Length: 309
Image 1 (tube, rainbow, N blue to C red):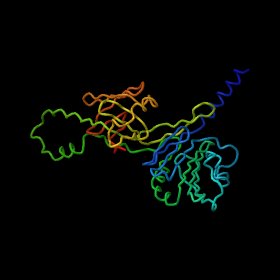
Image 2 (image 1 turned 45 degrees about the vertical axis):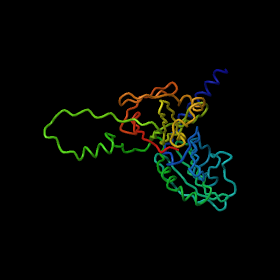
Image 3 (image 1 turned 60 degrees about the vertical axis):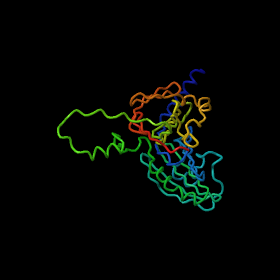
Image 4 (image 1 turned 135 degrees about the horizontal axis):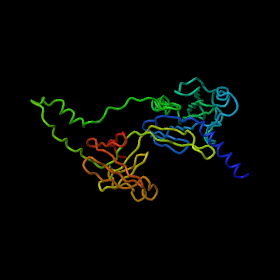
């Protein structure tokens, strides 16, 4: 009987999880953060935060009626729920690709400006909760928040134009464009190997923030955002979604021992042979291609030198 009940619970959890759609979005530009299950992004000035909650079952009641009555605060972490509002919220419809309906509410709470977007799909709700310390902070970060909200989609990610392939550095391309045509066809000289420069590199990648229902992974959230590689002059490598701090741009001043102790899966070594860059992080080996001075490519994602912190 116990085994039967466990099986029922397992399959019920699986059915619930399979019914939850994934949420796709771009990480807000310049913000730091990420997280597990609930994604949290913080502005550089730390005066605005965005909490993104994955799809969860709506339960009884009409989506629009519940939002207008409670702003669906029950879907927000208890310590982040609003108290008494200074004035009734301003609520309007919002368009999210793939969602059956979406509403956005804007309201003020204890001088804090808040925006809450709720999306309905397959009987489930995802919520984005934006909290600014002041109206000035809300205005200052309005473009970053707007771009993030406009990137949202439910189910399938939005179609994106493929970036042009990187075939040469700007200097090489300019020289090639201004060079006179060859008098007669002849075998092309081998291109010089791209130079490799140690430092901090950043690229834009798509990653999954999973969520779980009954112990089974649901749709979760797919985030397009920055990923960083720190490559030292003596062959050490570190990977993170937050930019590693290298005071004065000196990679040797990064705390390599702490990284290996606390994040061994993303810490290791690298080597360069010709135009091949091989990274060994934890138990993972990654093959990359150099694509010009200060650039390399991994699985179709291009990484370039970042300004050190």
